[in-house]
Image 1 (cartoon, helix red, strand yellow):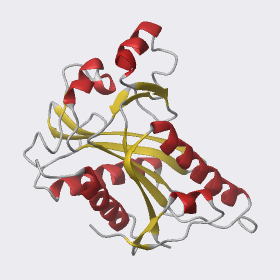
Image 2: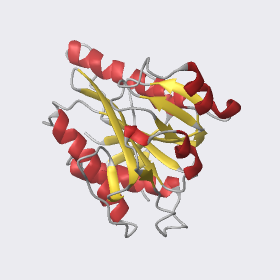
Image 3: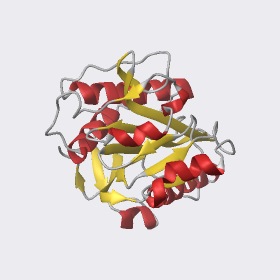
Length: 244
């Protein structure tokens, strides 16, 4: 079964991508509840580039004051949304690749910890494509040195079905991270591929590279491109093979 890739074009509202993700999750859960009746959907990854938005993970839900939220909204320049993913408050926006895989971990024989490791490894391999060395630390996400994080990670599991995922900085405006303590880590900073010398790299290019690395790590033979119409229909049908 191939890996379906829904690449949302241009800038996308967080709520739109989250709605598509939720539809995929519900479809996969319905199949798990009634496998003889409900068609088995393909494993799918949504990639997107969001308009400015701060999302708060489960650890921060209910802990962000009205004044803090107003500060994050930056006089209407950014949105503020709650998310079911793990972790704390982070930023998504133009110049950042967001990837939301929707998978059944049991189908891929992965534990939750192994899945997080797999996502991190896919990011590390993607960065290596651009001669950027990155690695894991004791802190969440992927780092380029002890103080600079290039990719945030936060996932949610429901009956072993994954949602949410990664935010990899390509050419992100770092000023947005000044309004938060990224993932609650004082004294740490965010960086991007552009800050590390990869000035010509685009989010779209990196999206296809990340999906290819994810496919390889999941030991899936091919990735296919799907459309929103496929997501909103009764099944997912691939249109053509992904290419960089």
